[in-house]
Length: 516
Ligand SMILES: Cc1cc2nc3c(=O)[nH]c(=O)nc-3n(C[C@H](O)[C@H](O)[C@H](O)COP(=O)(O)OP(=O)(O)OC[C@H]3O[C@@H](n4cnc5c(N)ncnc54)[C@H](O)[C@@H]3O)c2cc1C
Ligand SMILES: *[C@@H]1O[C@H](CO)[C@@H](O)[C@H](O)[C@H]1NC(C)=O
Ligand SMILES: *[C@@H]1O[C@H](CO)[C@@H](O)[C@H](O)[C@H]1NC(C)=O
Ligand SMILES: *[C@@H]1O[C@H](CO)[C@@H](O)[C@H](O)[C@H]1NC(C)=O
Image 1 (cartoon, protein in one colour):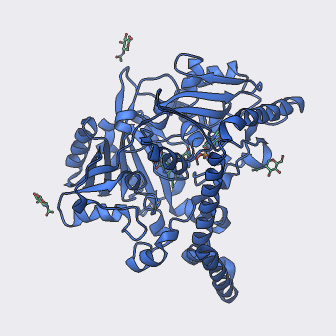
Image 2 (cartoon, rainbow, N blue to C red):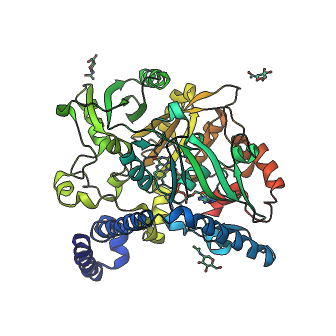
């Protein structure tokens, strides 16, 4: 009843205010009003609906049995598209506002959209230590299912709403990626429905070209209908160490050392200014000193990036035991640090204790309701980028970010990049240590100009043999894009699988011109 009542009261207040000031004005200049009164309660209701649904489906054990039938429905839609004369490209029928990426592809409305109703966990195989899932299974759903059974996946990307399909077709990373690689590197098999309507399975041994070409292809080789992901035993706590580090050189050196140290199960850096950072390292454990347990995920707790910043302000190191699930989703409540721009007083204790239980608003609902005004404002005054660069270029990279956009905190997340075939791999023959540098927020450089500044960063990233995540705004030309990514295997498969008339090329799906 709580969320429903708040929703009713919120709507009423919003309407009164909108009548007084004009709806457009309120929505653009006081977005928090709308978010707090309306979106927060709605987000809670959404979550309840999805959790009930997942519970009901699992409960009836119908998922594996119906899976086959649901795949046939997808194949039938592809056959239908063929019969209709392959008039336009195909894409998934998931509405653009539901995805986590802040941008919505223009193509959704005009392409033949294929309904993919695949959101269930199919099988937990404890012997092979593999979980088989459908592509719309979300991270929240998966960890909630596995943890009580004593299992987890090696790389749990942060936000609850990220889906297996999106993480494989795009990118998935977490602070354990320095050991396990990206989300794609923890997968052992994919099943796809291809442009000819056939259903294939691929692994590193079987159809291996396809297996290596799928990640980063963004749905342009076929429809993913199932994936097998490795599992590891879950533990109850992460023993987390915090260390403030000053000086850019010292930060990069310390961060690289910790990332190479295999005894750290987790490594993460938060850079608060050009020469101040907190570096965190964690170890999974079942035993905790109860006096040092910090349940950072509880709704009334301070936002995690603010909590970590304290160690910098007080110039002290620290150690805490954090319940594992709280750790995995430590940036979820504040959407990294995006929420401070939407609800400026969101970390205030009064707000946290009273309304914190409804936070965060669902990104999908934020997008659905943002309107053209806010979208334009955001595009020109807000950066959301993840750039993945070799660890050896980190110092240069932070300097480049500083002079082009000056967004803090910066998120540093190390990862291992094996030399597999496919769109991304290191320049040399060997597995190389990379780092994801994430910038989310308002640029503080005076000369910021969305296109020019992003292009500057993209150029830097290409030059050091790095990669830009595909969900973000990409201002590169086609030539520049294929300079950054290795298209050889991808293009070979596009030909073999007759994708030319079935799916757009990945660049045409993600470039600036293709999205609003
Ligand atoms: C605020 C924010 C926070 C983020 N946090 C993280 C984070 O903590 N860790 C992280 O790793 N990443 C993070 N990301 C990036 C995120 O990983 C990518 O945006 C990811 O690709 C989005 O996943 P999604 O589930 O929304 O997928 P979608 O955006 O729905 O999917 C991405 C693409 O994959 C294709 N696709 C999806 N399912 C299928 C299918 N079944 N068949 C064929 N094609 C398919 C679609 O064509 C789509 O274009 C974040 C992004 C934002 C904006
Ligand atoms: C799917 O395509 C139909 C037209 O064929 C369109 O009306 C609908 O809006 C599309 N769905 C999405 C999610 O865009
Ligand atoms: C922080 O503490 C370290 C040692 O604990 C000390 O060397 C350093 O000078 C301190 N820095 C500041 C800015 O106080
Ligand atoms: C890569 O490996 C091949 C043989 O596998 C070797 O001939 C070549 O010199 C290596 N290149 C580099 C840059 O190490």
